[in-house]
Image (cartoon, rainbow, N blue to C red; front, top):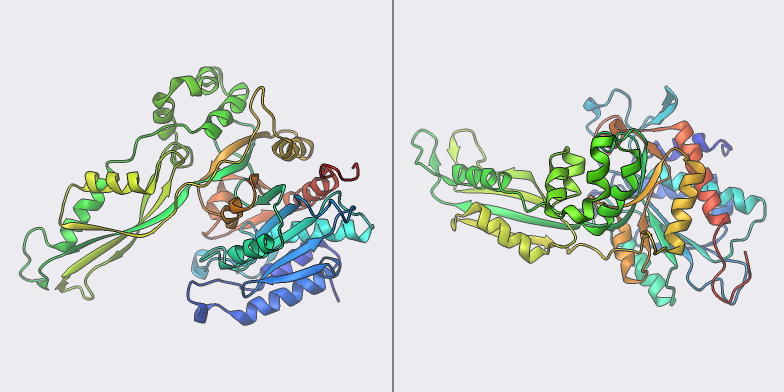
Length: 456
């Protein structure tokens, strides 16, 4: 029997361990098959629409709008992804795929990233279809199956839409949230709407030299030299500054800040580099808004405890702030390390992504204002504001066909919940999940008709 309770539906899909892998042979295709079959049963009206596969297990679903002539033009695209990252079960206080409901929340891998969003979108659309509602313009649902690794299905979805001549009016994916405790001194939750993303870049630092027996070490061997390079890079961050979306974020936060902070936030655009330096001191989340970041994530050296490695390598994950470039980042890395014996290899490099329109005093944007207006309706205590997404999403590839790509999950998330994404004890509050369904429903109901189309 198909459950009617949205929470029970979310439980069912969270319990399916769709852990993606960059190696196709290690991706559990059977689990993804099981997930797609469950979704078709749980949301039958959604799956009675026009469904196209994108990649191996991604879905692209079209819901036609009112006017067959104009509705297909400039549709809304709602995005989420079906895959999740691996778990270390020993770190969890509950079964990571148990989808247990307790303490007013559903616990499990993917509840926040990103099956909660998948379920909320499907539930909103299913309920509107059930009552016979037809949107003012086409609505597409794009659910990727490999966002955590390659985003191949998202790229396939973009190719399909481009082949059909579809240029979306707005794309909405994960990335922001109604975030509590996000900024020091601000008690109100901040509903951050991502208008751009940092570029994702990976490099390898490699030192090659003489290896040998650990009983006769030479000075400055490969491992030592690599450690020195890592330390130098850690001590030499790139310059801090505040991009335009962050300046507008601060302006909106200023009225909610304690008196000593109010002037600094409200005048961040005039403070220039000083504002960036202040932000860099406000903790990791805030600091990441103000500069390109470097994170050493992988280390490789000796295969044994008593062997000096002939080669030592470190992987560095870099998130490139708008205004910086991959080339300028590589120049900074080489300068900070200051050692020609350390080879700096670019593994992959993405420039920062285009900035979507957002509203500032004297200049509004219809799509951005629709999103933030609905945030104020459903989450009246929250401060809606643009921001730069620190991670990466599938939606970055949709910037090739759409000028308005936003990143916002309509869920309240505490600081602890945000920290649990990709970590242990990920969970979504039940009230937050239900509010998210309501938010998506209102968004679809509020869509304006395309120019030349029927009035809403």
